[in-house]
Image 1 (cartoon, helix red, strand yellow):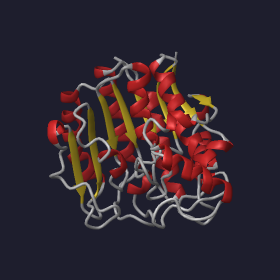
Image 2 (cartoon, helix red, strand yellow):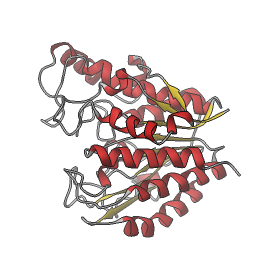
Image 3 (cartoon, helix red, strand yellow):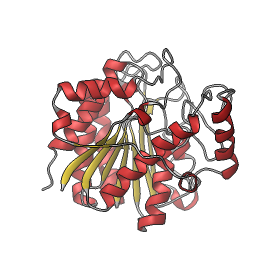
Image 4 (cartoon, rainbow, N blue to C red):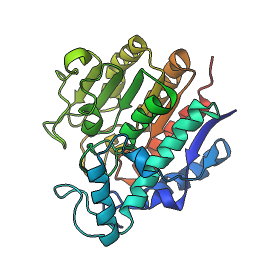
Length: 317
């Protein structure tokens, strides 16, 4: 069995809002160029992107919203939210390919064809069930969660998010769901979009205590991240998930153009290696990493290759 699958292809790279936009279509190539320079391409199975079917996307999103994306995709005009997420020609197909690639990776893991996987253009954690938000058209994280349940009967799912921005589209979709365990380390929402993710938000109703928000102040470093991380480890070991999702946005590294955290790649390596060990303990190694944000190309290349190295090098006990 191959240890790690990585998804690379022009159809996946196409998800972006034009050259010069922070979320441009050059992000995947920036990562893959560095991965090849480090020889990681020879240590993983390279998989082609896959486009999700509409009915798969609608496991998380409303049909009305999906149809609206398809309409905007034909014209390439307008916004899919209140002004952050513009349409472009083919946006439906591009966003469906992000979602389909994440689904294909999840299925390969569940079928035992690989132990872990990484999809660089994925982790679109702001999209809500009925609208886009924050550069995110379809919430592949939510579609994966719903599909784990629908296709494989998985009950206890952990979602860990280390993007600088709080993963509000995932958090609030599942804030009352006691079997989705969410740990989210992010820049304090008082200083950064989307303004959510306060420490007191721990879930609602029967799900109180199944959510963990750790807001960090602007300027927080690797030292702050690593000091907070044992809370995540304890939380996950108590949860005993059957599958772990990692959204490893690289906008938390120093010198990202739109955030204020100051991690190095070590934070991402540390998180990925730790989650590999927990996945091996709890859920037969099942760990899917999704690239998320990151708008400094050197940073995302560095952070995501650190994640892939950890996935490759962390061997089961």
